[in-house]
Every structure is written in C-alpha cells, then in structure tokens.
Length: 87
Image (tube, rainbow, N blue to C red; front, side, top):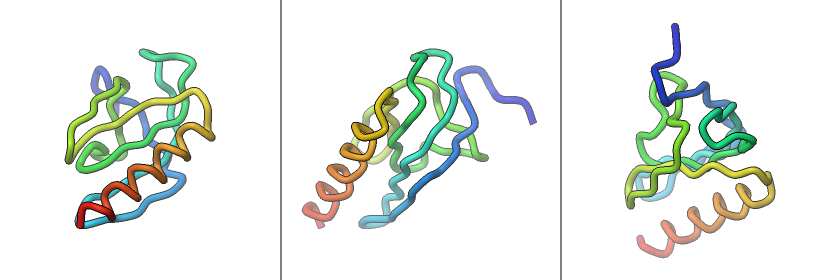
C-alpha cells in the first residue's frame, strides 16, 4: 500500500481511551515538519495505520508533531487528564 500525500506510517507506542476518544503517542517520519518524529493524536486521526504529516488540532480529532519525546509524553498525559476532567 502506498502512502497518500500528506500521510506517513504511524508507529504507536502508547494508546488509551478516555470518554470514547482514543489517544495515541507514537513515532513516524514527518517530512513536512522534519526533524519531528513523535506525535500525539486523538480521535479518528489514524486511518489504515497512517497519520497526517501536519499539525491539526480540533476538539475530537487531531494530531500534533514534536521533536522531543519528553514534550510529546507531556502532551499525551495532559490531553488524557483534560479529557478525564471533562467527563
């Protein structure tokens, strides 16, 4: 399968579900925002193992790319916490 323009293979490191919304922490090759390699995604962002290579932030669907793994981990935890508080 070839990657559609603006998509890359998503390698999921962690995944959780809060209030019906999936949250992912993963890695990928992001040629658009290079050298970013880590992402946090939520909702239905990942399709057929692929993720958008650009940042997109909407309440129920989005992905953000990071250079630093610790920064991505912090965003993953903050997003998980925020969704739990909104239950």
